[in-house]
Every structure is written in structure tokens, then in C-alpha cells.
Length: 248
Image (tube, rainbow, N blue to C red; front, side):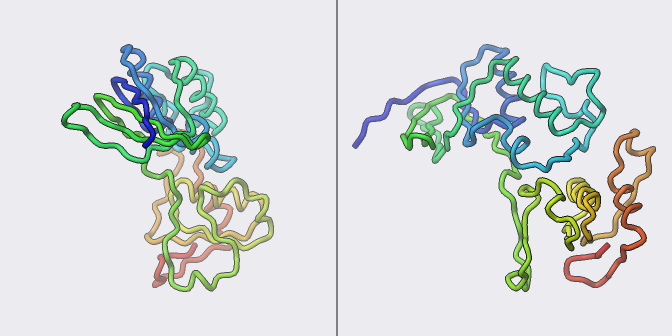
């Protein structure tokens, strides 16, 4: 059996997204030794590679800053995707955050004899096993890193394209095509707006009635729900009694 060298540190952080790098900034400011393991090839992978092109933050920038580093005064209230990514990259550089990328954690357990967390990881580039031991283990892997498409009766008979929002980039390829958007949350409404901007024939199916907010509740920011409703109002309809909700 091969002998593996075990690297010891104070804290292991799993995940290099916004939550992970926020924790690491706090640890680095306190000079606490740490190792951060990231499965992907960059920090904030979901933000950079699994989001649509026209994405704006859905919250005011004041609620989207990480510890010890505010957004620039000159940045807009609702930041563009590229502006937020630039902020994250500057944050990583400023706090000297150096993740071990392409490292997948395969198992972790608390060794009561050593009083240490033992971590077994695999380097996805070389295939080699890497072992770590730490006093504390922090999981910052997020709750939505994998797209989920629920099982629906008859979906196997649909001959068109079915994608999750995480695989959508732009409505350009759907020009003049019929598209059904499932859901009416922030991202789904922004996706519907993007599709309609590219002249696709867009419908939205929602499970429950929608509440429409006017400008005074949105702090003067982009009101995507209003934009979609105004753009689709003449051609939209509601069908009740559907298994999956209302069709707008």
C-alpha cells in the first residue's frame, strides 16, 4: 500500500466560492493557518461560468459585499455580473487567498484519537491522493452548485431542448423560437426578459399567483417583473388548474 504524507493545518476550508473566500479573508487577517480546497479551476466558479450573460445582482450592492472590503462608491447600486466578478478577484488578491484548485474532497471524518479532522482528497489533474489533518473543518460548498430538473410526467416525449438555468447564457440562440420558462423567481424573470429582448416567443409557468411590485419598493433599481409584464402583457394569459401552476 502506498504511503501518503499528511499535511497538517489549523483549519481546512472546502469550497472557494464567495462564502469560502469570505471565511478565508477572516482567517488570514487573524494569521490562522489554513488550507482551502476547491474542486473547480478558479474562485467563484458558479459566478464566473454558470451564470447568464445579462445577470445583475438582485440585491443592493450594500448587501453583497464581503467582510473587510466594501464595494467602490462609483459602482452601481445593482452590479453587473462582470463588476461583481472583478470585485471577487480583487478580494482574493487583496487577502492573499491561495486555494488548491482541481482538488476534490472524497471523504472527511473526525479522528477522536488524534482530535483532528482527517480529509482525503484527490488531485483532479494528477489523480494523486492528498491527505490533510486539521483542528477544524469548514464546508463552504453552497446549496445550489448542481442544477436540478425535476421529473415531470411526459417529459421524455418532449423533442425540444430542455436546459437548467445554470446552462443558459443568452437568448440570442432562441430568436423566433417558442420557450417556456418554469418559475417566477428573480433569475427566471430576468431570463424571460432576456428571451423577449431577443424576440423569442416566451411563456412563463408559475405555481402560485404573483405579487407585482412598483418602483417605490425596488429602490429605483431594475424592475424586471414590471418589464416582463409590460412587454408580454398583450400576449400573455393565465391558465388555472394546471399540474404545474399558472401559465402567463
